Length: 135
Ligand SMILES: Cc1cc2nc3c(=O)[nH]c(=O)nc-3n(C[C@H](O)[C@H](O)[C@H](O)COP(=O)(O)O)c2cc1C
Image (cartoon, rainbow, N blue to C red; front, side, top):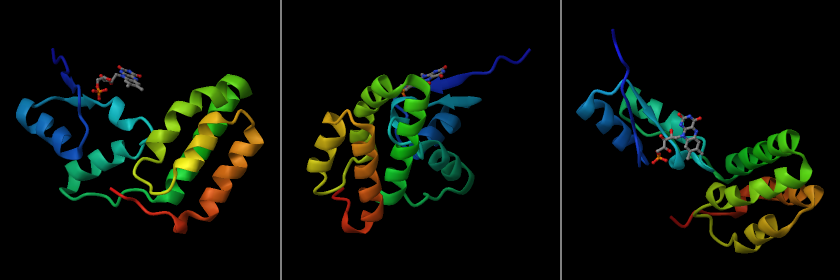
């Protein structure tokens, strides 16, 4: 009988995921917090394990598009009030490291108006080229 062993806890980089696999020979890895507001993490880990190279991280446009999809799904699932409220804790992670974003983040986490939030996200998507990462 083969009992699969999974590793978890603090896996926050593709290198760490590979180290878990090589050092402990685990059958799988569970990732939690590193994926919050950064769903690209799973693909990045898989790509690194396969090729040893890093995928290009998502730009501002991709991040906004993911946040919009997430908001739409959240509202469809939980209803407008709760769907908007639950999204508020995710924006910081989606837009981590982007310079001059404070004003937009503040609006995203304080507004309860779906149209206003979507309009802001669409504006950010259209003007993604104006933003830079400071990390
Ligand atoms: C947002 C979130 C969702 C999770 N969902 C699941 C799940 O569906 N099934 C599961 O077995 N573990 C789930 N976990 C637990 C993680 O797989 C992992 O074991 C744990 O969070 C520790 O890893 P971390 O340090 O990467 O957060 C989840 C954790 C987080 C933070």
